[in-house]
Length: 423
Image (cartoon, rainbow, N blue to C red):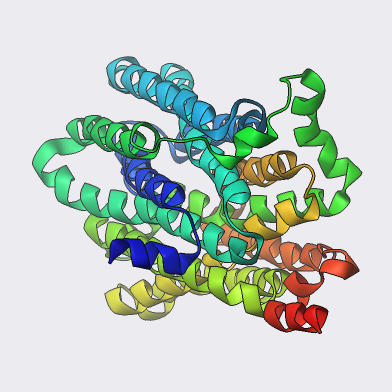
């Protein structure tokens, strides 16, 4: 029965094992997302210092995300994922034994940043594997499943686990328990997943010129560069929220557990719509879904999420609903993962590097906006900056189009175009 279900997806069993491994790995990576910043602030860091820590972490993640695409094409996805596992484990141990106990920002930053180098190599390395392994007509659905397991582990299961583990284990032991999930996920994705992946057939010699292709392609094909900017904007607000929104919500009467539930609801809805928008985009059009549901939708729900407590007070249900709507709109950016490699079919790894760079930069840009602007403009000013970025992304998506001969992803109705071609 399980084999029949896998066969219906049109995806290989190897990818399914990989998805399961990424889900569990990202659960370990993301379990501190919703509470680490307020915990550090309680220990003596300022909001700006916490934002700096998360920004440097995000910058390290962006660098690793950029390299993940071209390195996966050169050395294969599995090897890049293995390196990501090793870096994450080393960084975690150093952060927990040296950085965090020191309560000194300049000691925390390098150890936490080393940890940030690891997870993009693992997760985005696998995304390159998906781009090669999945059939072209199922690519939107395949990347939708990837973002389903990525977000499900990072921001839903990890956050829910934290809400249960924190009262029992405390902050430090909860962080240590993350290594269990990371090792289990890597075992499933790598050590139980035998056989060569499709990217290995595309391997090229590891030359500096090809590594640089992961940057130069953004200028050779400006649409790929624009797509990278849109991907940077995509989750920037979500990563910025973790720096200041917990404190903001608590000022209106919510508890830390309430905030964790909001954050889990945001990403819980997100993972469902990662699947739905991945499937829907194969019909409505990749660009259309990103532009209208993603960019415009996030601009509206970002404002609502911030102002809802001011309008209704500590209304738990209303805030949970708005958080979920924001998460749904974030999911509408999923088709970028199908659109980007389709813009450069001969250089999928390089195109995915730009996409991955954008994903990594969002973890840097989001907290950086908080650190730079919350002082002079306050929390409201930060929210309106995020809103403006989403509206800018909508304008940029007008120009991210596929060639006329491959218009199906822009116009939708892929099946109709294929049928016409067969007549």
